[in-house]
Length: 166
Image (tube, rainbow, N blue to C red):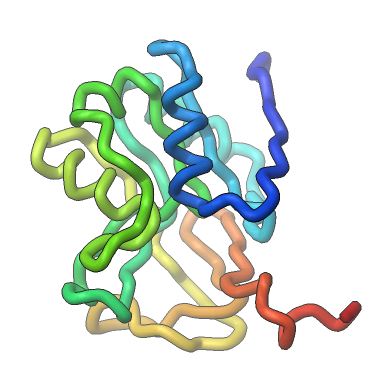
């Protein structure tokens, strides 16, 4: 595809803090595609689609809701698989990816993008190996989640019960 990739390994760094640093360090025309270590694009075309969408000023990513926050129905693009151009991030006011009492990691980005009428593509969950969470009022998603377009995410892989090597 002709794209540069950068692999980083932030030890003991908060997820949102890491994402903020990457955007701050990027050039204005850079497109960042964040992919969690436990997220696997099963369809190579989905990477191209996400990058092309971000090149046009949109934000592309997997959809999530956070049932543990004050608004468990607010759908947002989670940074488990998420494409954004730095110019777009600047246009929406450079909001932080860090979580707080009202926003999960990356949720503030969606709120700002909605306020600025930025085009967004939400890849919705389709199936989960271990349903655990309610997606709005519909399908439960959870551990081992498959998203539209061919993205797999192993939520909570950091937890010991999902790692048999320890």
